[in-house]
Length: 139
Image 1: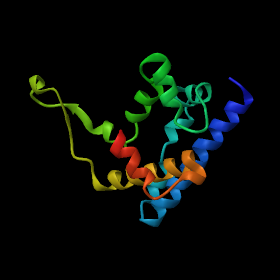
Image 2: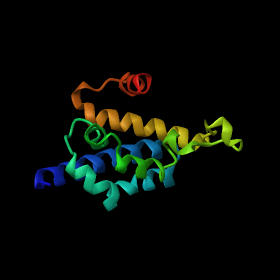
Image 3: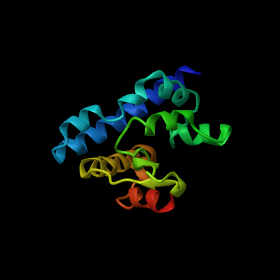
Image 4: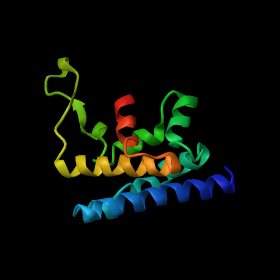
């Protein structure tokens, strides 16, 4: 862990958080704007974020490439309702496997604000209004 990675990761997640907060406030989601991604500042997500920090994409992608999974991502998606993965669970009939469950609209809106902010944060001057959609259409 370098000081550069420590500061870079902290700066990146904080800039991202403030962008999401600003966008959430614009649509009246004040509580979600304030609480957005606080789990990224906890050790389970922050330390891997510093270790795998690159500045141009999520550190979770680098962790996933190295380990085959991202422990930080698994922690994050399980605590943040604005990720559609939070809403995936087994059906009541276990033989039918996993199923998506309906996300409340406020979390769908926060999810879009999150993707817009992440695209602006990681793409910088290369960001266009198509960037958030391009991310989802290729995911």
